[in-house]
Image (cartoon, rainbow, N blue to C red; front, side, top):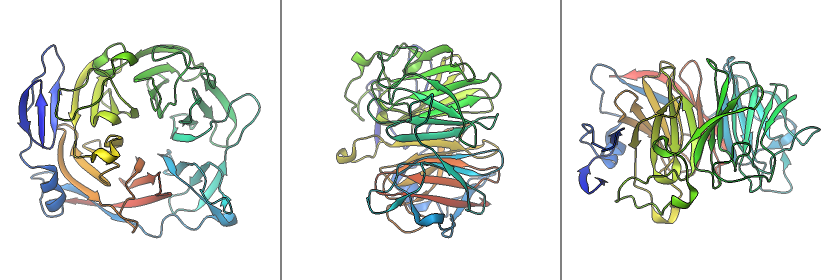
Length: 378
């Protein structure tokens, strides 16, 4: 794969750019994505080891009440190591749909399930992301046309806050409303909620007070002011686009960085919390034109944050990167319907305190899977 830095070709699986008026490539790994797929299970990472995972085909346990689930668009882990999913309901009209929000315990038993329209808030037309904050509150994002808001509930489903009003998007620099927001993450240090906004025509990160919903700041690619009119068709062989495309995921690291998935442009950009651009990485550009929705759907970290896990939906893989080097050291998955494989839309993921990974599949996947952390192989 060839990646061009403003006309300079570099052959690599991973490309990293440093912030500044001129972009210079950092030293890059010599192996290709294809090589990584072939030899990840045998190639050690000197001195550190590579995390190894094994799918738990018996997780979760059968749902009660003959419930069925549909697309699993959101996955989260709380402080109890309970797993939460946001699901869109089965496509089979004859099936008994589970509620859209489901909480599982670590063994895969349903603890509770809830979610429906109610007084004082506007329930989304289509579920998207779910997360739990340091106060044990649940944040829900939505991706139906007209879903221009996020919702905050207690863990038992009591409504607390709505940011934005349904159907009221004022464009990519509107500071009151959103446009099909993809994910929401709360910073426990500042009690600010960072929103990947998103699935619609807002190509930005936006930040609000997590209790009051008061607007704080927002930014686009490279920390610039977002401009929808300047979003151009993505050419994987050309220079990096100056604007975000689909801002599909967002994570906060413990060392103060904001990681953002620019799904449509196959890249992750990193910022300081004030929106200052730090660097970016293209994990893979090997996406078939027929599924040109972009590769990078979500990311998460190992409990010690040494490793970053990246959900590559169209290629049906989870990539394992050394976070400090932004270098691929492994992967797992593959296309298919068997346990441990992915129907090519691994949409969301989360990691518990023991290092286990949980993935949610949208499109035709309709399932959540658990990958048990088995230690690091040297």
